[in-house]
Amino acid sequence: MSPASPSTRVLPLAGIRVVEFTHMVMGPTCGMVLGDLGAEVIKVEPLGGDSTRKLLGSGAGFYPLFNRNKKSLAIDLQSAKGREVVLKLVGTADIVSENFKSSTMQKLGLDYAALSKLDPRLIYVSHKGFLPGPYDHRTALDEVVQMMGGLAYMTGRPGDPLRAGSSVNDIMGGMFGAIGAMAALMQRQQTGLGQEVESALYENNVFLVAQHMMQFAITGKAADPMPQKISPWGIYDVFSVKDQGQIFLAVVSDTQWAIFCKAFGFGDLQSDARLSSNNHRVLARSWLIPLLRERLAGRDASALAAVFEQHGLPFAPITDPQHLFDDPHLNATGGLAPMTLPDGRETRVPLLPLKLDGERLGLRLDPPRLDEHGSALLYSLGYSKDEVAAMRRDGVLLPEASGSPDATQSEGASSGGPA
Image 1 (spheres, one colour):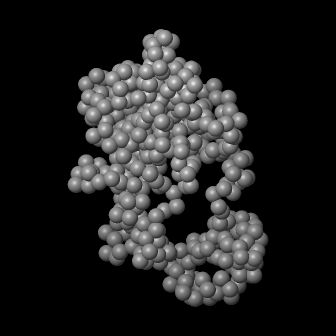
Image 2 (cartoon, rainbow, N blue to C red):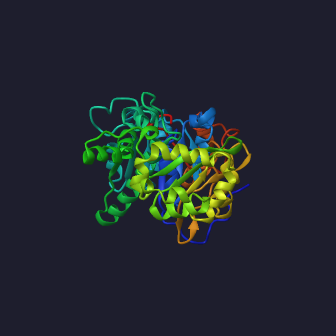
Image 3 (cartoon, helix red, strand yellow):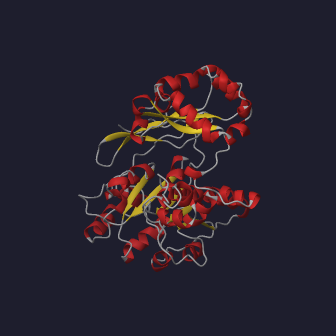
């Protein structure tokens, strides 16, 4: 299953070249966003490949998701010849993106200070654990910053901090890196100069919990963890129903309350003065929610969903991620694109959650095989077939049997760490 034929429209970042030195999630997410928006993204990988290619368990989906619409070049950056090739490649780039430790990039001569001297127009995106400051020497992971940044406290029950069920900081940190890169491209049109963009896991996490910080600033009361919080809505809960089913139901306005009561024949509740407004219902939750749980327990989840949908009330089935492949809305609206994995298996992948001019941003390139575009890339830089073959013999590039003679892009690694 190959990527669908690209639209004839010109994508927003067409003509922009990105060279990325990234691994795991944060850095690759930045490149994925830029690639989906039309940039040519070259992933520079070590000869052994990005370690994300080989992850098991919850990391098994990292590589194919975050490395679509990219090309791969595998090269030995510890060798003088390898660095020469990469510097020549960077010389053709608009954006360099990395998430290695700063010391690693400095030792390779690939830090912003060194590269900006060679090309003042270069935009350099660094993805780190922390922005420069007292914590920047620490090694950060998504879970680390969730714990220290208040998100795990807000997600778990009191005394039981719990990380969010996705790599939220890595993904959003990469998105903010991409936003910064696009802002820098706009500014470069005015100034003619590039700049360094810095994005960090910890600061991203603080942004995620900022609403709770501001809640305290306004009310003087600390925010309760989500399972313990006082809901601002009268009905806003998961209900256990017939045959061990579950469904999320919400009634968040007085109009919706009237519709809800009429739809289910709860006239006694609608006429109860203690439930006459949303705020009244919030104050009555201690007895209202148990009462509703009792009244709804014998109903089927799908039947409840049908009533809520018919009357325009908010509801949601409780869905496992793997079942989203069969979601009728995603399939009807083109939200899942066909993809061929590096090992040849076919699957589908969620696209960016937006449309431009009525179209989804689709797949132009499957996640690349290791060094899939290496040779073609080097030819485009002016290296001859004999020179490329010599670099393969000398171990600067993968041997011909491992690499692909028509290769064209590159990837790298970062300090963002595992998700």
